[in-house]
Image (tube, rainbow, N blue to C red):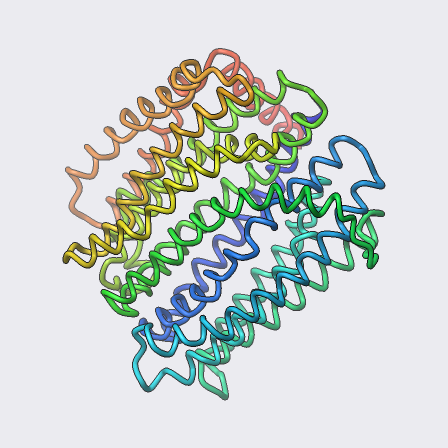
Length: 509
């Protein structure tokens, strides 16, 4: 268990360093792109890409199944079975890619040209973006088994290096957009498509050289495929619900508010992606250990990962999100040089949704690890499916677009409670203890941490000084209350020991 904890910490550190670098690049890239493309084209790219992503509803469920089965079999140590899973996964993804192409090139193309609100002068460019987004999507779809193998083997340094390449390439693309010899929107979509092809090639070469099971053979294990599709069949509800909530909400916003609101949403998700990247560093390292510990029957370690994982996931996001929430207008203005309509409200609401869902992230992985997902997908997936119709009704009745996110936030909390009671039935999770050890601590810590920086913000008029002081007080306040209220006695002791070891190493350098 000590070795696993060290590996988890090492992988988290590697991925965190990767995300710090990518965050800085992505935030600056967004500013360059917004200035190069303009608010309207930036919004068009987001909504058109969203239409293509909607069709991953067909593949999303089996993609989750592939990741789960590769990690699960690796935890059991059956090498022959892993090879069979990998080859079957490649054949399944190729088949799904053809199905997605059929739907996107018919229904998707019709929807783009007849329903989406796009200025007439940009229709041709939007169709080019649409086709290039399809190619990018299919490439990423076929890459899933390779990415799943890397995560299952916990080779997070690979993600770190490839992430550096991808981030630098995106920054270069943003600058080249300014000098594009063709339409800037088309050039941007084409460049991202070529980048995805190169990243796909790197992942493939790495996996073939380092993992014995990543050798594709034209052999299909029918019993395995049946098992995977049985898992994916129920997981389809959850995959559909997530996509309809995110991309369906994006399209609903377009129908009632136009591409400018889509641009604001795109900016909000850029901020969320930057902040959430730090959480991804932790959860990407955490998830394989949850699945492997369940597969190998290490119940105590498995349960400890759920409790600590849920709590730490939230605290990571909270520390990063609180300064942004309290200074959102100033940050957006400094970052972009402008503040498109709805942007600040969207950013705050998206961050609140992500914090809410972070508590559930380890619980979802645990549920998938058990393979018993029928009731889970019926109840949780059913709740999430309500996001789209409820959001549509609100906007149809004249409510502002913020209601799309408020609806998602409320449903996110309801889903958390449902997950807990289902896990009680499946793995014996103590719901009362979870509320006391995780949810109550998270809630109390958040409220108390918010008060000091909020009070400071009320007494400072200078925007820059307010940003600096409020951000500093936010971080210090959060850390103080997390350590003394958010963590239990054992976690505080571990935290203190970690700090002492770090200080000793720093002094020794």
